[in-house]
Amino acid sequence: MTENTSFRPRRSCLYMPGANPRALDKARDLPADMLILDLEDAVAPESKADARQLVADTIAGKPYGQREIVVRINDLSTDWAEADLAMLAGSDADGVLVPKVTSGAEIEAIDARLDALGASQNLGLWVMIEMPLAILNIQEVAAAGASTRLRGFMFGPNDLAKEMDALPTPGRTEFLTALSMTVMAARAYGLVALDGVFNDFKDDSGLRAECEQGRSMGFDGKTLIHPAQIETTNQVFSPAPEALSRAEAVIAAFALPENQGKGAIQVDGKLTELLHLEQAKKLVAIDQAIKALSQQ
Image (cartoon, rainbow, N blue to C red):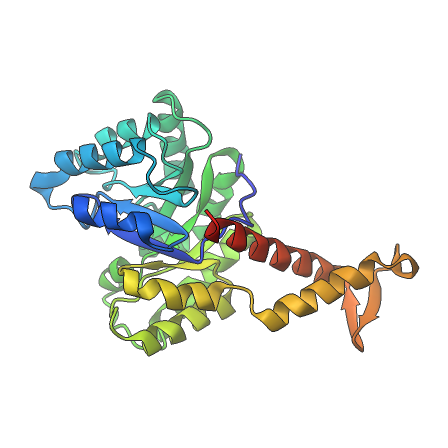
């Protein structure tokens, strides 16, 4: 039951603390494509219930326009997760983000629980890919999207580094296999793949380099921890002007009467096949979706 959401902009996906009313209010004016209201890491145990209610009240007010609103719940093994799911099942949120998922069976169980709670199929399911077992089971996890509301993956480098006992490096050598497997599984099963956070929000050059790395690997966008990271991330994950011009030329060339029914043509002296036409249409659709969102 995975929905085709390929053309919805998800360049910048900003975590916002669910217990902080000022931060949630400030988010109204931030140009992030997705807001992730966090009930897990950003909320102290004694504040979980109050944060849940604050997030519920905030979502009910629909203050964020057309931006995608996802809520990260607490780990399913905790005492808070069931109440988190129940709140979201009756909300206007676009999605629920579940941490520490490691198997396809968990995806199916979460989906069934949301159905039992009366959640709309419009409430998408997102999962954190942040455990070694999630990487080892990544095909199974992705395949569960065929029969559930699973929308995509959000890579979680901090927890994964902890579980691996890894020492993070600027080039993310320690994560390259996990990053590639996450994107590969998402692409194989029609899911969205969002890159993990960059922790040093004052290091814009480091952020840009990591965004460019993630974009080159095939990620749709990046999760963020600070509003200062939005502009750079949006720039990197937006179609480049020269790429758009090329895409428009490819679409126009294949539309010519003399090229109807052809599987390969020349565009500006370059061999261009139907797969390039498909890529061109997707790029233009993404650009149009970005422009539409920015006008909201």
